Length: 457
Image (cartoon, rainbow, N blue to C red; front, side, top):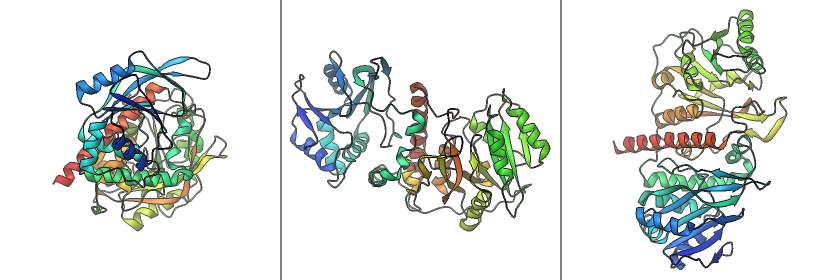
């Protein structure tokens, strides 16, 4: 336990431990087995933490009133200029199984609950290098409630000043590969314990009797992207294939020059299908549905965002070829992160090689995304549809498809994902990030419940 600092507490039921967030399994077992206090207060290193008045009393009071196994709270955050702002967190739920769930910097852990959980589900594996607390948390979540107190009980200095658009690729950074493998193993063991693990057995993709006007359609939802939509569409029109294709651009009532750009492109090339929905309440998912259920949609539907482009003229052919070689319901490619001028940005290639046929659809419940570009067998996609939201719609669809069908992968870069100030996720405010994280956790909750029901049958 040489990475820990154990100090006396002003509360008789609490032992305070200052610790890194990534604890080895052996350290967790030692803590639970040697410290005799009723509660362990874990304060994470990396920032300065100042507890509020009666914080310890409040944490213990809520823990004892509810019987919660783990308690965390909102806090206040101090930036480099000394400005203090509220930092609310989100509630824990069944689908909050990702290893990067934000608990803040202070956790109150019931030692009796930990002893009971480890007695029932086994000790934390001693060979874990980083995931000791993650393993314990998942076991605690089975036996009782992990509870958020929506009150700012402490103040901390800011931990990570990077913008949201700079953080979203941490889990696919190749420098973190060993860490990710360990976290996948922990999450997979948890899914097995709760009856939500799926064996690598897949339903056959059914034959379709539908008649399609073209073999493939690239679908681009867009609103107010006059600077980039022309590049995106032209990257589709430049594709070389031995099959017919079109590009369906769903123009969600743009108010800048996007509509005019698309009208000109459609006039120049009949393969450009410019759709403006009659409805005005669509998010990205709703726009996708508009394209997918259109009579102009092809046998396969391939994604392209309105500010991105395909890397070369063979992208579409490679994505469709993967369907025909593997009999998949969905295919996901790989992409390279670039700036507006297509210069490569870290981490560069995002190939999601953590995906495996044996365990990809289980590990998908732990991570925040599956990659791009995404492509679909339209006959299956039309049976499911997309939720009408503008964040997480693709993730929800991929989880739903992977529950039954195999997903194919293309591991070479076929897509340039442009990171620039106009990206919708380049610098999200905290309330938006919380809303997005809550929604993805809810999607995971529903999917875990569906898989539990599937296994029970």
